[in-house]
Length: 495
Image 1 (spheres, rainbow, N blue to C red):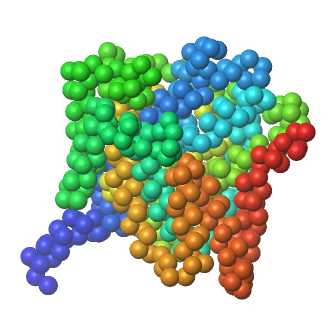
Image 2: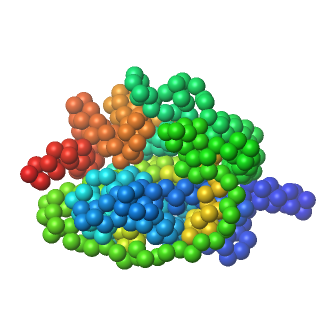
Image 3: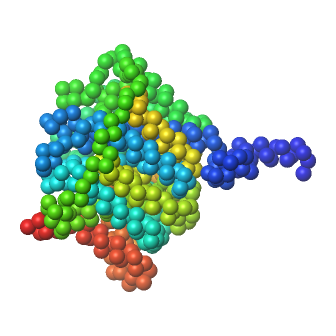
């Protein structure tokens, strides 16, 4: 080979991100080995942060308030301050995401899980105090860590058929796209008739939703044309459009009196950039729930937290790994045991900081879609979360309508995994279908996984193929049956 040919091959390898490692950072994170570049990792980490930044604002709104009148109040009359919850949300998300990047070397970010924080605020604190509720979250995390360290969690993961793993990826794609549609106001509830509708009364009537559509099309075009940093460019450009629209039209926040306003955050330039975080909730947890409501009732609450946490995370990581090309044909990915252990630690940290259980966020798909393939992207995202503790006003600039456009584009990317599933066998087709549709329709990854597992076991057994079912899948399916009827069981235990 000539010198010119060698140089040309080296340049082509560098462009693809497949050349030899070039430095300690590259070698530690295996950036080149995974077909990425440092630039892609930095962009991916940045995009994931902006796709997830809303959690620093939304989690405090779910768990806390500015007074007892506008906050979830526990059984003893206690409540959490939004400023303190916001600080803890950023601290936990930042520290855990950096840890995940360094230990698991995967481009996944962790933050307070929306399903669990809502469950705590609505269904748990009516019987226990906030510190006791966070103690239950911590116990749930310790159980998950124990299963991960012993290898039991990896064994359950490996027992899942590859068809269901692919279905989980597709289901998550539909789920995050649906989240995006709902958060942007593109899909809304109807007063009567069908459960959902397009916009308001079947049409798009608000400027924020129109901004979402503009962002969706812009990002879609950039991604289709393979523009480097397409998602990030689209996110920034659409945010500028949103800021301009607000400055001209003065739409304000959405409410019953102002349905055409912005949801969650209004895109305006902040008057100040820096705020000092209040870390007063650190360590404010208690195990007193087992005495207050009894061991059986408290155990049922832990069981609910455990199943939601355990299988939401498993499904999310499966989908993200396959989307990023990091998983093999069976859905397994590098450092899976380390990833599962750190994710379990997320629940422990969430309880200890009163930020609720922290888990791998499906919104990480935005960074993966941008090209992130290593833990360097997670370190970037985590660092930005820590900075966000001090720059809370700045994180509110990107409206949820713009972040939602990112989710829909990434959801479309994840849908491509459907080609990996042979739907000719109905014992495969029905569990896959139910897994995919249950996630968005019930707003729960865990529900979709559970329905898929139970249906897979029942259909295979009914068709004389019980030997094809891994023994652990039987155990997990039985556990999901209990999970699905936990309401009546809790009533019986409580009675």
